[in-house]
Structures are given as C-alpha cells and as structure tokens.
Image (cartoon, rainbow, N blue to C red; front, side):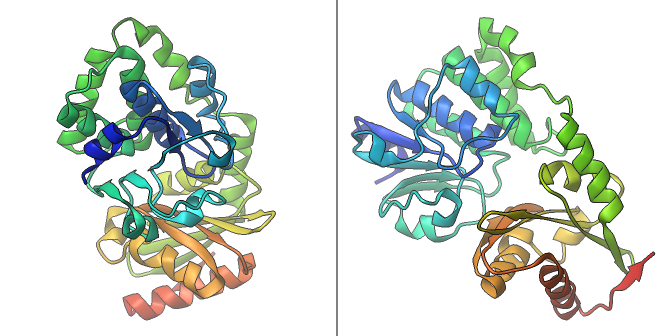
Length: 317
C-alpha cells in the first residue's frame, strides 16, 4: 500500500511530530491535516519556540499521546526513529520523512522517505499532487513555513525545493498576511546567549584544512551551531544536558559531508557507544544520549574522527 492509499483509508488519523517539534515537523502535520480535512496533531514533547506561532495561528491544541484520542492510524512526520517520537511507539505507522531511514521505515505500513527533499513539508506537497488534493491557503501556509525554515530560507536549496516554494507562495492567497509572524527570525535573548556562550566555550580542533568545534550550552543548541558554522567551522557539535541524558546537536559543511555523514555515521555511532538514538541528514542531525558526559562525548568524537578519517587533530588555541 502506498502512502496516498493508506491516508485515504484512514478516518481518524493521529499526526505525530518529532519531539520538540520544529516548524517543518509541525507545519507538515498542520498542512496534512488541512489536506485530509481530519486528524489530531500529537507533539510528544512540545514544540520549539519558533514553531509556537503555528499553533496560535491555526488555533491548535495538540495532544501529547495518541492514546488520548480515538484513532485508526498513526502518521509520523519528519522523524526516522521511534526514539525521536518517544514515548509514542507505533507498531505500523504511516511514515513521511526526509531524514536518513531508521527503525520506523522498517515498521511502516506505508512510507515516503526521500533524503533529497529539502523538508518533510516538501513531501507533503508531493503527496497532494499525486492524490490530486486541493492545496488550499490553509494547507499551503504551514507547509511553506516548514519548507522555508528547514532549508534556511532556501540557502543552498535544490531547484526542486525552490519550485515547490514558488507553488506554495502562489497557493497561500490572502493568508500571505500571516507569513511574517510565522517566519519571525528575530533572536530571543536565550538564542543570543547560546550563540555567545557556545562560541566562548568551544574547543577547536584542526587537521589540515578541516576544522571541528565542540561546545556546550544550556539550551538553544541550534543557535550555537549556526554561530560556529557561520564562522567557517566544518563540523560543529553542541551538547546540552537534559533531564534524561545529553542532547548532541551537530551541523557540518559540504567539505565534511564529502568525507562522512552526520545522520548516517557520526551521530548513530555516538548513540551506539553511549546509548540512545542519533540520526538526521548528512549535514545536520541530533543524538539523544542516555549514558554520557560532555567530556566523554568530546573525547570519543575526536578519537572516532581520527580513526575514520585517518587524521590527527590538534587543539586550536
């Protein structure tokens, strides 16, 4: 059964985002709900601050567990593994995702997984086209927000993603007035602090023309990764302590991705070593580690890179 057939067969789906849902995951869920004309949105661990405006604009009060509502299918959006949607643990989900495949792909009763897509929202538009579903302004708006956000406002986006954005812009019609507040990229004080502290606390490593930085912050990990990537660092690894372990957020340059994939190699290796789950894209991803300290992760990471790349890293003062 393909994804369109599976979605047409359901009458009361639960649309599950990944933990700490971002604009792409949540925007995909909202967009798909509008396309289907039905469904309950489930955010297992809440949403990020930038995604909060989507909930407010579309007046959505998501559940945190599928068990809270009657349903006949679970649709997972923008999450490759069960760990990324825990404690939700579906045995046979419908899956739509653009990350490197993990254990949810093998469970899925139907799936659309495409790592070349700029965002999961892009895949929802693809499904709408195949199914001949009307792309209403209410569906197009959250999908546009998700796609723009996940591609860094089309920074380095593929021609395919750009074409989808053009189509979505044409479809939002009079909802365009809502776009500025949904795409607000002004930095909260917490983000500014994370950028500064992440840079100040970073330990730098160099091997030839390859630069790596490892640092730790209390929150807004993505903001810290962007600050160091903007400075030209090839691999940025940001750790933050959580109640149930250590979160590792990583971003990499094209030069690094030519040698190793974050989602396919580096982050899964950390999860295997320290327990937990890790994955994402070739150049970006997250690992949730259950048994690790910051110092242990840093030491293991550098040793792993040296072994895999055949390089010797020296500390940059």
